Length: 196
Image (cartoon, rainbow, N blue to C red; front, side, top):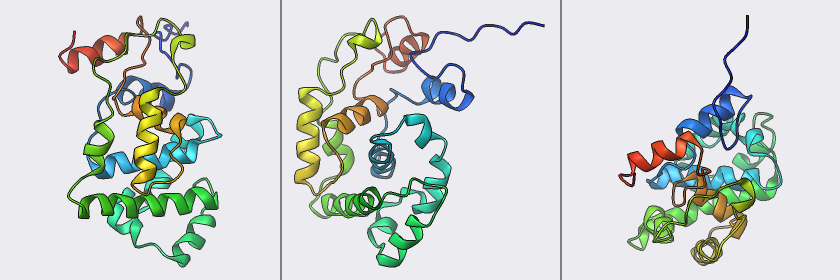
């Protein structure tokens, strides 16, 4: 018995978890400080690794970091760092763990100053949005906008947020839509955003 061919995807074909992420999450707008803090944290942990490595550990990350509640993570101390570095379910990198804690504190500092991570992050959404890429070769690794976002995040106290990581966050959180022009999900994202 033959199985039906999988539909075209920009990425993720052949892995159910990755395909679901591509089809239902990547490129769709993400707002909310907790949600964006999670995404920034996971993008930082992904640095130097493949995204599927992080995606497969996402639930373990959520459990280890209190659901990425910025207030909870900001209160972490040395015992929590030791706990995280001993957790085999996550990526155990001291610099990335410490950056995540520092970034939670930066989220709280933004709030205390009357702002939010959501406002800061989304202030770098390009307008107009770039045209749909035709192929993976047309998808940049970073842009002037991601460089500016990384600079603004660093100025606000965030760590492990270089221009490439910032651009990956912009892609994942829907500031840009880098689904290829002929990807069926791109049409769905455009319809949902009222741009179709």
